Length: 90
Image 1 (tube, rainbow, N blue to C red):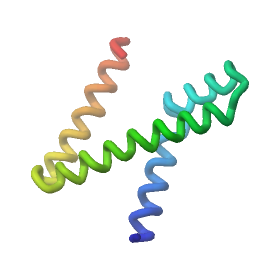
Image 2 (cartoon, helix red, strand yellow; image 1 turned 30 degrees about the vertical axis):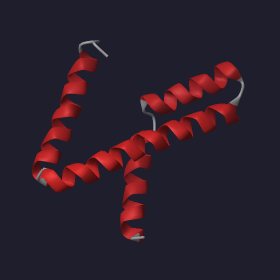
Image 3 (cartoon, helix red, strand yellow; image 1 turned 180 degrees about the vertical axis):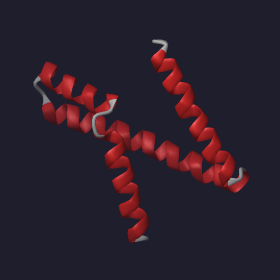
Image 4 (cartoon, rainbow, N blue to C red; image 1 turned 90 degrees about the vertical axis):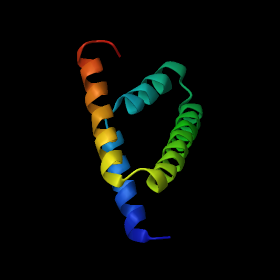
């Protein structure tokens, strides 16, 4: 395993997840249910599954689509999601 790639990925995902909707949902569920370990396991499994899908799709796209277009597509999706959130459609 490439330690540099591992640490870069960990840092990027860790910083991106701090304070996002997923973390807030997990805090709310933990407070509501009083079952922090069940919420931790459920949210960890969900994040693992979503990350696995992203890695598989990203790996497949890397073989067929130029990296520049993948970056543009990801940026466009971020902008679209931001606009939808600002207009209360998400």
